[in-house]
Image 1: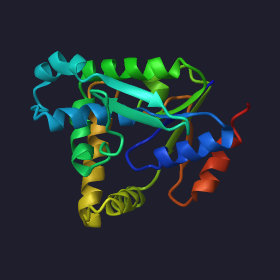
Image 2: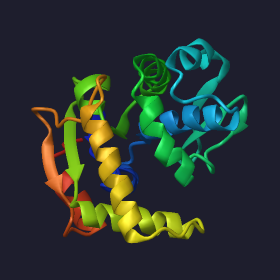
Image 3: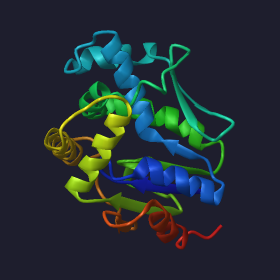
Image 4: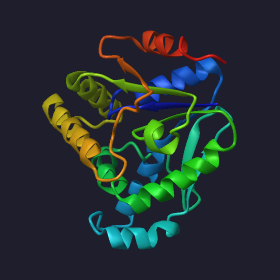
Length: 218
């Protein structure tokens, strides 16, 4: 069984997916982490992120691997090194929309995701899971929240890592990311026609998970 959870940046997809996974006893797969792994590699190896041709020529050199740890957490590896702890840096967050917009990158990442998802039941979260990656998923959800709420969440995440950014600046970053995700030529952010829409602006994590769980029959 596959459960697809899509939504914009900082909509709580990652946190909700982990909580739902614990509730249902099904591993969670953060597809965005794979794109972040690719982006981190490109940044650390000084690639021009706007040189699509060069990036696509070097994709296979990245050796991106996704592993399911014993605690059901997906770990991201490049060149045999665990980079999971670095993929959430703000510089990666700002750069990943550029990289993820390339069709070749999406094909490469989706191939890696498919290798993991084929191993059993998974909850997958991202921006095009229900529309592109798993269009036949048994359950689909579209999770969102207001711009201000999402910006505050993102600001809190960054603060926890020691990155202090004003709320106004984070709101601008989130707004720009939304525009990039919605308007990219390849697999733009869309709510699948058969997805259940949930605005969790005023919901707690537990309330959000409760709402989703009531739709799922194990």
